[in-house]
Image 1 (cartoon, rainbow, N blue to C red):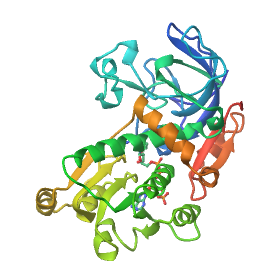
Image 2 (cartoon, protein in one colour):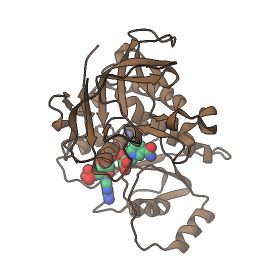
Image 3 (cartoon, rainbow, N blue to C red):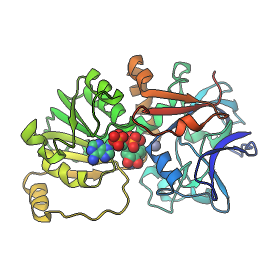
Image 4 (tube, protein in one colour):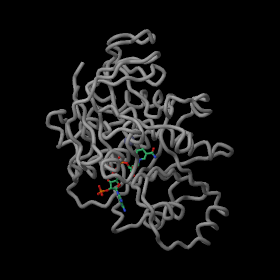
Length: 354
Ligand code: NDP
Ligand code: ZN
């Protein structure tokens, strides 16, 4: 079957011919509809994040998928059911306490593989298999945009963890800011628009730019970090109650602390490489303590976050989904899906339609 992957001796994604997987016990065979590409895929392709499945000389890419059950294989799923797969799987099929508790998203490195990212083949192929427990059913109406469930679930988890830190007191946030105008940032900005009185999104682009158009269409304020750095947000605009970092730009972590309002929380999502820079550690420590500020790092997500994400996706406006999807490529002509320029927001590879 056709698959899009990277090989150990090549640095570009390419069309591969790989065996069609056979579902094992408890697994269903899924026919792939669409698979999204995000910043993490670009990091995997560049070799800065993730790694090949053990003993394999290629890895099938893709972790944001939607498909339709082809063979339920006795799992209780129905043939024709539209499903979205989660990303983490047991390493070598061996379970551990995190999977037993249903919290693989909290497992440390080595205690999981991530399909299409680290140690496991992804979903960018005509078919994939998955334990039925890791397939989240969605309605047929979501077949076209179901690949957005995975990235939205990342924010559902981040919000859950960030809000949990503010749970012990009467927190009344009004202003929220997303750092980053990539696809994760823009999806999150829409979600914040449903919750907060005032929203901001930080990028580093000149107008005209399609992401700035979306930011403004969402009623948010666009902030250019080349003119107003994140730690200047309180002076230029207002102190921010909730900041969501989705740039991978490491200095933003420190700047976030200064930009937060007292009692505010920052969720960190970016995955930077090692990066040395100078920090006033005293002020940072002082502000975190005396202003009850909090930073929380969060990665991946699991079933309940996917379920919340299905509800969120169902309420997203069609114009936004259409504006976010800038490329629909086919496996035979896949290169446009991996172009990462200012026009590209979300590219998808379409294997089939319902
Ligand atoms: P993208 O690379 O598409 O988006 C990152 C955005 O941040 C880009 O639009 C980029 O702008 C912007 N940016 C980078 N540096 C700055 C800066 N100094 N000032 C203003 N804007 C800046 O990635 P995604 O949206 O897919 O993901 C966002 C981040 O989250 C990535 O680091 C990704 O690895 C991470 N991630 C983490 C997950 C988790 O579970 N923790 C899951 C998914 C993603 P420009 O394009 O103009 O350069
Ligand atoms: Zn991702």
